[in-house]
Length: 415
Image (cartoon, rainbow, N blue to C red; front, side):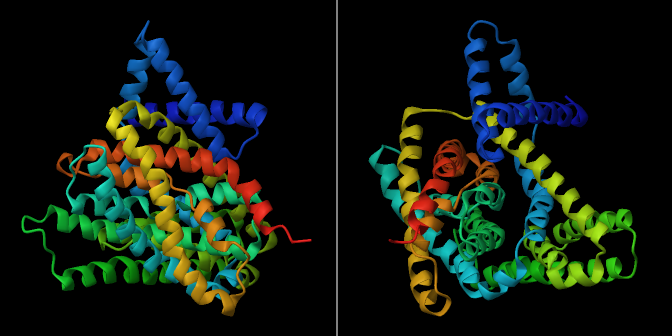
């Protein structure tokens, strides 16, 4: 199939599944599409036992999609810019230090906790995996997915202060998580198993700091251009150019495109910039356009995630490891957040039960699957892909469906 046929098929499926969700299930889009696509795929598998025509077509479709490239190199920039554009910059500025610590030290601690525990758990189920590869899994599963988080929190009724922490962390921690993943990946790929500290510092500096600086420059240039004219059509095109051009520049300079897009989106979406650079009609068109892009790419992404199960190797020990991985990842997140929350609690007056809500509301999504797909066979790609898929499916469906009642119960004032 050519690229247009693949895109057309995914868009049609997204429209049909989205319609079914809105008409009958009425679930948040990420959860609804994930459930519908998994059910659809399972039905195709059952039908395939009698007539495999449709099954082979679906397998052909999903096998021709380079999930990692499509998500990390193309879709993620648009989704993060759209998410950052609608994030409360003022609240984020107040919460900047806990968000920074959650997105850096929190992800790093979670990476090591997951890696260490999984190393011993995999041995218990009869799977011998080197520690460095378990650590690599810890790096790919620790970042929360802003795409999944943003879609579900909108309907969960999370208090604004807490929502800012969760959204802010998820917007930044995937960029940091990718850098940690790449660092461990380089160590695991090295013949000696060692990478110099200077190389790690250089990688971190170029990817993270360079990405944020590039995003700040992009945001400022976009703001200046929008301020100097009053034409909503061209101003919308300028925002598209900022994302596409900025992503291209970041990739060529080996900077973090996700962090660049988050920074640019926060600047362009800032109330001060909106009031001075956008007329009311421009603001409406910019917001509506990026909301539509957000919804469209979200629907396609979660249809792709649901269909990805067709290319997995579901062995018994892999499934058991995946099921055991769910509480391990949740425990690691809870522990990694505990210290920073205690440290900042008195200064910023956190919402009661912040740690529990952030642990349960920190969903995993397509980014983890994309990183798992980039593993080599030597790194036990099939095993970690199945474990990642099980954790992501539980996260989006299990945690996503229950986060709203849990938030309401835990934030309800005591009488």
